[in-house]
Length: 188
Image 1: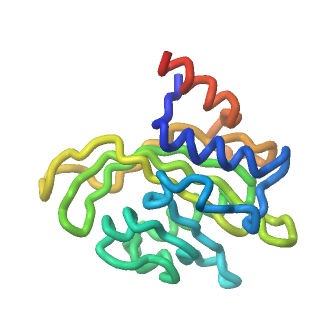
Image 2: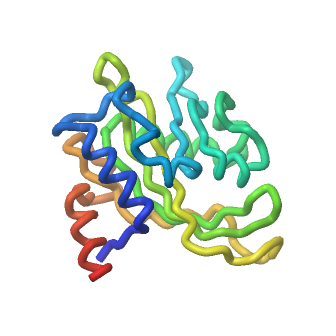
């Protein structure tokens, strides 16, 4: 059974409220609707060169990175050897379209080591095609500071979220409503 953090649920519910059965259009996105989680939200946009940049990054994410991320290319914060895999995952989200829920251990710029839950969901441009991804990080726990023995960056795929598009070959998928139902059941 998949269970997700309450802040992750908040983003998923808001995203679902925008879509009216379709892929939500970016112009309908309003951060005022979810102020509590915005510090840990980013919106990535795929450029014409098919590389990604941070269209928006919340203050909590910028603090973890140790720099302002808004406007920066993804390559500024993802190691060169990890960038092709990261961009392939983002491409799968937009090309499906589908969502992605994963867990990852991350080290901040100050050495803080956290276990985080990441929810990534596509957003459409004016033409209705997916071209942006909203990503939320829910900090599940802090593992300490500076411990070099902790395996950083290892991603555990929890689930690909079936949005009715083409699913990547590595997952059967779960629908957004199933994900929320599983989480509600786990909390009761």
